[in-house]
Length: 80
Image 1 (cartoon, helix red, strand yellow):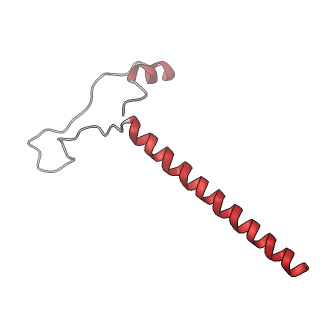
Image 2: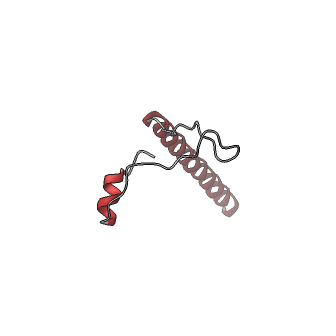
């Protein structure tokens, strides 16, 4: 996690926080994975997700509009 920082959390809580992590020993037989790296998403990934969801929204709006006009046209044909 790259945000919020320890200093920001400490200020928010008005309590001092320690700048360390508790890790398991490498020679332990079981436990969590010890060779982890933080997952940091690049800004391009977020931009890709934004484009994807806005495209879905635009497609939904286009489909809704087409179906609305098609049903309105059918209703006019039935009434005439």
